Image (cartoon, rainbow over all chains, first blue to last red; front, side):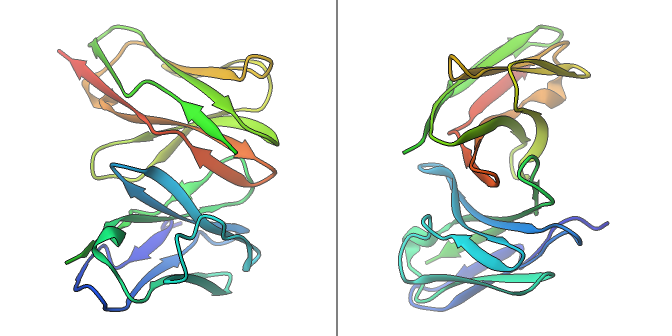
Length: 112
Length: 109
């Protein structure tokens, strides 16, 4: 298997623009997680899905953030409008259960 | 709420043994995981403890004491490639993982 795939790997955008991050989980994994990592806040869980259904979005910072999982092989995390403080590395991870998560390579987002 | 504490940095020399501790306060605890992350890379799974005791995987071992809300990762025969950040993470409920702030391990020759 190719592992968790994320795109783009790097994104540079201007404040106010819409940003869409994409993730393809490992086939057969029922869980999908979106994390954000910064030096100040560490690795934060934003939202996770089970069988394409959002289970817990309590980590989503504010209404500017939204996530969807229209099918078992694709998920998006959207930020609209983006702000400089959203600059971070965003990881997608998938898991067949709660024991072990497989992380994608991450998307490094820079908002200027 | 949930909180995890681990040292921010640890240093050691090649061939040595190092222990990274993790204490946690959480509700709905299911287990403790450890992940390794090299600079610029993604976290990768190292171990998972659901029950008290020691789990050994090669040079790495992980320990859990549920009664003490404490665990540790033990790295033996340190190699330069072990220089990385190490995160403990608690499994809350059946499927939610909350990460600690990470311990940066530097291995010197």
